[in-house]
Image (cartoon, rainbow, N blue to C red; front, side):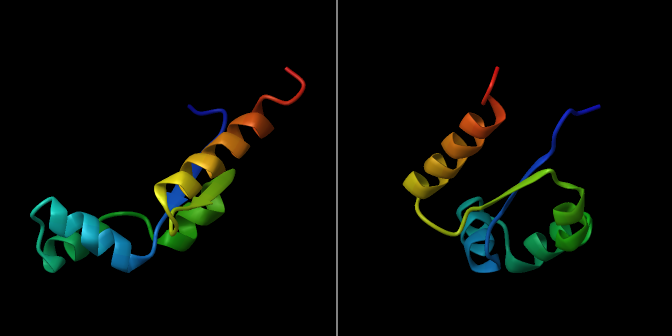
Length: 74
């Protein structure tokens, strides 16, 4: 029940770093990711994709660009 789907992806090294910061073992992250849809399926289902492989500032800028794009002409 969504008008649009945004998928934010990040490299596995970054996801492992975030998981470790939460106290998850590598096997816990693997278990959780195995329970999710494959990345390619997520990519195909998403209307928009943002790659979170850079800095927080780069992520903020990407979100701002998408926000502006979605609100053009409204």
